[in-house]
Image 1 (tube, rainbow, N blue to C red):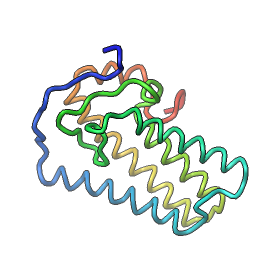
Image 2 (image 1 turned 30 degrees about the vertical axis):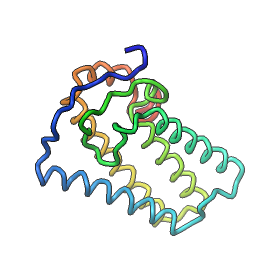
Image 3 (image 1 turned 135 degrees about the horizontal axis):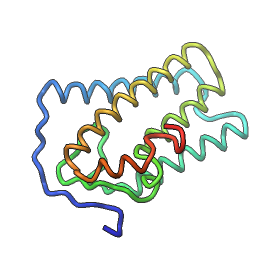
Length: 162
């Protein structure tokens, strides 16, 4: 318990085909929006503040990935068999730091060369990631009884905001 990881027994995946399709659809929309943002503007912020903010976002994302055990890391919102609930590292402060990092970096890129189209892609990405995290949290509540208590003491994406 001190490590911040709570073990869970190997529970078989119980997702129906249509439920799995929704998970894949959410990921597809996520990747399409990110690709559209990257293809319609600069890949690297031109301003020093933008570069700094993007760097912070990338650092947060890397910290979250390095904190997450490989068997728990999954692009789909469903919880893998043998996954553990991680409550250490950036997960102490927000429940979805990888989503926070992705939204932060892409927002910096959009604001560097703001167009209505790029902002639309970012807003669709935001809505998609919120839908994805709500779905993921449902699965986490089903899998980990202690998730409700963890959820009560942490923010979803942005500390003190959401």
